[in-house]
Image 1: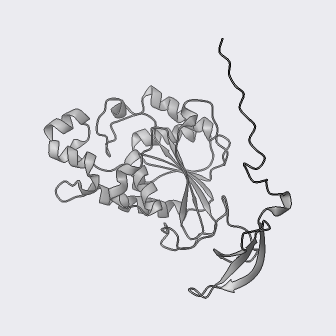
Image 2 (image 1 turned 120 degrees about the vertical axis):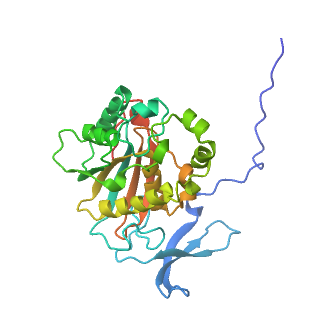
Image 3 (image 1 turned 180 degrees about the vertical axis):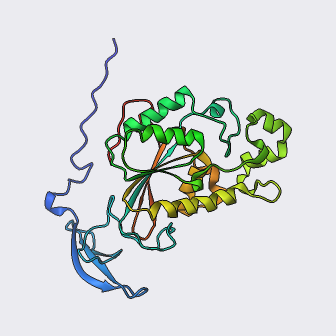
Length: 303
């Protein structure tokens, strides 16, 4: 029988002794400086290392002083100019939270057809169940308004989620899906076969896809910006938005300051949810992208 040797205990000198509790670096506010670039007051801190051999380090905060000296961490933020304003710099009366939801699985999703702005594709039985899952997952969240595309598959999803609620359900044309002309209704296989160059451009270079000089993504970027403004200037603080994948991609990209070339860098599944927090300057912070846990369990969201 073989035998295994026990590992030897390392020498006490192999590792330096741990720092005593009192020897951790100490962070203390030392004074307030004026930023030489902006002329605005900044917080300045001194990090004093109690362990020998390490020099003291002074660190100047990048954040301007606030009236109450509250830290800017987690869900609390007060940056200005760091991202794109979705309200053309019009100041909001309060910060907002916006939950974006993609409609449930539709008949043309299931048949792998190009949907675009067509109103002929409707929710499947699976899509209806996905909408119900969304409703259950959001049951503990109080929304002030629900905004939806008026196109049937999104409209039905919104009506299922919003069932028995007294708050308004508003349909916005600016939330309609991108218009894809004669490709709409065709299976992807047929579209690729009959219009190979056009279809490949839409799939691989959608920012430059056009028909008769009309660029659908340029238009959907414009309507996404319009939708953001309509939503955020509505009274209330917590909004639900139900719409389609292409316009959802545009909403996300415009909020993050991304151009149409980044269109396919974002994806949202049927019934998937995204969450943005928007400050009073109309600047958005993405907090969740394509949440789908609720579709596979009884998961509920709290935020």
